Length: 364
Image (cartoon, rainbow, N blue to C red):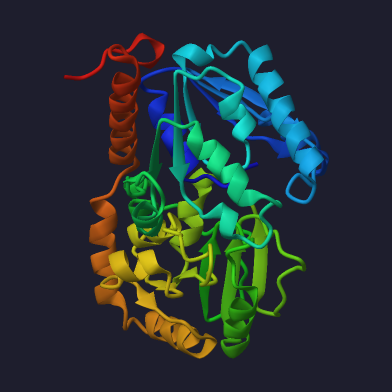
């Protein structure tokens, strides 16, 4: 039920070194919405990777008592599952569950920054205090975003995102039947359309290009449905099916807001578009400008964004797309996972003096 991304990739790669329990707390109403489809995801073991989806009450960002109840329930569930905290690494990517770090004796706690959650308008009351409590109990921090690695305390170690290059570059799957037809071209966005997504920009760009179909693949978590005669929101699709969709895009879109919180993003979808050979059009996110301006088209208004899409569809962005593909070829989740494992082993050695999580040996 999650959009596959950095957290899932890191869990998968760390599981090649030690047993990993991946926790995906999920609000009760999402469980009810999923119905029978939930049973395939609720609890499953894949070798040394165990997935657990504990149910939580909704509204924890609006209600401090609900947040505390959910956090304490999660602590109780971790104990009930028999996870040996003293021999385990906690890899955390939300700052709003300090109880999980405070009340369990983890052998090591690592915070991986991939968003500046406390800066968002929807952050719970006292978000800065919750974040400070969490950071006070972690041993080390990492980030996939250059902005956060440069500005957050520690500082966090910058570990770039990767991509499953071959899956996107070598995909020859037929056109998915649920892609819309009747348009001159398709452009698309993969991922959650939520707090980062600039819905006004997206809809205005779609309005300016009526002969282009705009496809959103992923959950839409906005105050209202996406609108537009040429807009199709297909919902969440399995990650392994995404290359078949992306290869039929004339451009891959990153229509994110800029401003507090939203600027601290290094979107993994950029490398996925790039690996598929699809031109990338993005709003001016700092990491995109700093790291990918030579291989992605950056546009900050609906007018320039629409114009960039038109140029991409006309083949005018092939040089940037080729450079982007080279960048994607050089990136891999294996390297990201290896770098995270090195951080874990170094931090474990620093804290414990020898050994490693799950009985692993430290490297010299």
